[in-house]
Length: 215
Image (cartoon, rainbow, N blue to C red; front, side, top):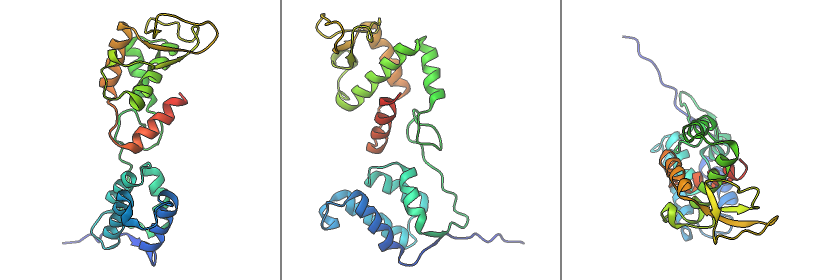
């Protein structure tokens, strides 16, 4: 019987110290001793496990992404510099949220377009509702949609929409006002949140926040 030899991953000399030196300088530069910070300690432990052959490369990147509060793609770009041969290891990004594009740290615009079609939203209303999603994710995560405020900030002309109304019933022309969701806005918003639950991972929260801010 013919056996297939599996090529194992190979790391550079002094991998442990080199990787942690870069990670510490980038993500924990204010920490004097690694055990003084919980996430820094988790980072050191994950690299130690991988260095000793206990942890796979994919699992290493996932753990470092959480402890360093950065995307898997960015962590991979750092660690891979100290891998001399990936062998038969196939690294794949784990997309942990449906709003993110598979294999790319960007918005899954096809999924966004599908929800826009489902709700029959024009581009303006869709962008306003996604901005409301971003604000609720950042500031009002634990409050029911109809009970949170300050999800829209803009001029009356920008927020002329059946999905939003002035937070106090008054508007000042040509200046920014605060807006809340109408009952119709709440219904549309609930559909969006059901399709795209708020991410639990801080790295995904930050990534989605930045991407939606520039939508």
